[in-house]
Image 1 (tube, rainbow, N blue to C red):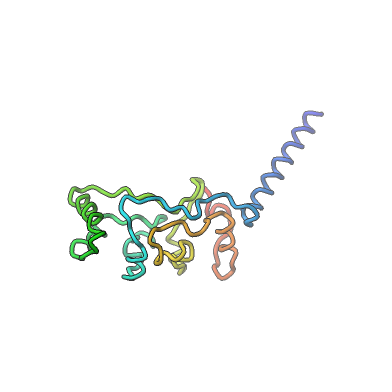
Image 2 (cartoon, helix red, strand yellow):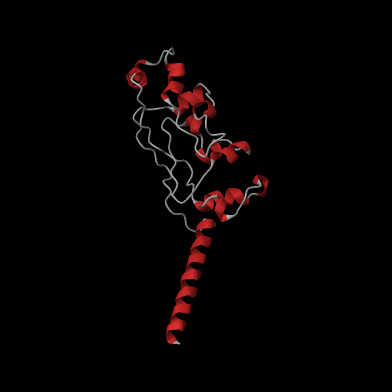
Length: 180
């Protein structure tokens, strides 16, 4: 009888603790480090402030999969070379363009590093957010002003849940929306 009491107490304690943890994380009472401000060094500097800012190239031109895929996708070199085959660049940028052109001509790719990171157990699908009219800046911040892209928002569970709770977004709140 004593063992059953201890087992029941343990189940209640673990269940209660887990429930409290889920509540705290989903309401931003605690925020687990989600790499906010993370800005890895890229193999070729890509100034979004120049491309998306000054030249006003739409995010969807380079990240063409964002409307139909879970992932926004990193552009292939042929997208870059659509412009850089003929565009004159500043002299200080020429070595980077040459590196990109050499990779393109040899059929290789550039190993870009992912900037916006989520835990493996979280699934995020860009397509429904874009179809709902969300702008890239709502999650990614003022990308058109960033010389070096960095993770602007925490992308924590509570951060996402707060957006989904906003009635204007008409977004689902069930766990399976984001978790496998």
